[in-house]
Image (tube, rainbow, N blue to C red; front, top):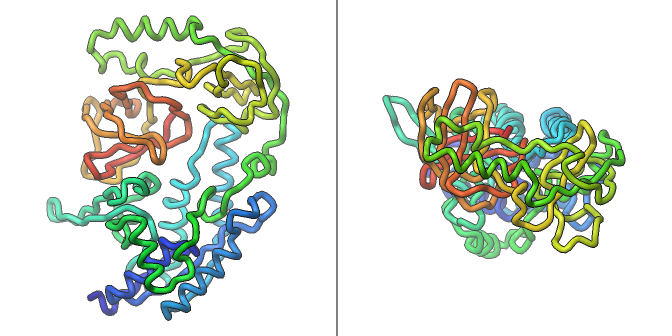
Amino acid sequence: MNTGKRVVVGLSGGVDSSVTAYLLQQQGYEVIGLFMKNWHDDSVILDAECPWIEDSNDAMIVAQTLGIPFQTVDLSKEYKERIVDYMFAEYKAGRTPNPDVLCNREVKFDVFLKTALQLGADYVATGHYCQKETIEKDGKQVHRLIAGADKNKDQSYFLCQLSQEQLSYALFPIGHLQKPKVREIAAEEDLITADKKDSQGLCFVGHIKLPVFLQQQLKPKEGNIIEIQKDAPMYLQQQKDESKIDGDIAANLGILTRSYEYQPSDGKVLGQHNGAHYFTIGQRKGLQVGGTPEPLFVIATDTTSNTIYTGQGKNHPGLYRKGLFIPNDDIHWVREDLKMVAGEQRDYMCRIRYRQALEKVSLYRTQKGLYLVFDKAQRGVTPGQFAAWYDNEELLGSGVIA
């Protein structure tokens, strides 16, 4: 039993955090429920997707059911500065951000953690489907971030930017459970959230109308939608260059990880869009262009010229890349003791988006940064997103895709 240890639980109004609070209570912790209010503008939230008022009420009822103290903390100022402003800047620059990863690093395990510590907490706990294991290495405690036992719900990717200090305060009580078991526990304890559907959309905000959200700062601006053919010269050249490598990957990292550079003259105009910053690589919906034999997909965006480049079919070569690059400043190691040095190469598993199956990857550390070369070409490698690498079930590090 953990009598005397105080834990602040981020009660979100969902079933996962509700059961998190219950399990900690059963383990003998002194539990406090804290709801984070991060957003004030309901005009961009889809009404059917559980706005924050409903979530807050559900969190309060859960706290009452469990007999634990409950309060709401307004972090909307910090959330705007650290998450929303970051999103606007990334979209404006033509990159696709991942606010959920940043929300965990900058809000839940930073601003929220500091608030919890001010309340005398020894730990903070969340309803993430991941696990933590603490080992001793060279006389020091090392915290390992392990994938959740439920492979369909594993959320370790969203925590890929956490530091050792942040992990030292973190508890993930449901990480060893399957989702159906979590709902079963909630139902047994008569928690109001037992049958509540999982939240979607932006971290602690809700399911937002992204174009409406972005138009708060990024105004619509008409530009061209250009189609690039599958047999365009740049693809044929890339295939030719890769065929000459002959196994010497380390000497050809630039070729294997380069992205395609498109010009309007490379293709034909199919139609117009209302802003290149509203689109992302791999996107199919929203182009509003018909009449092509195969569906159109976004293969690149250029916010400087306000141009969207597209290609027909899910197997279009513009959708695939063999590798990617992460600059020095954007490399993060959860396991600081396992950092790579220039000239080093290691083989791991990797994903470049949530829910993607892990893929075999080779990491090459250079003076410039970190190159990731996959065994199989990856679809939809997107600048601004996070690549996270694993050793079996353990997430070791991550970085922002250039």
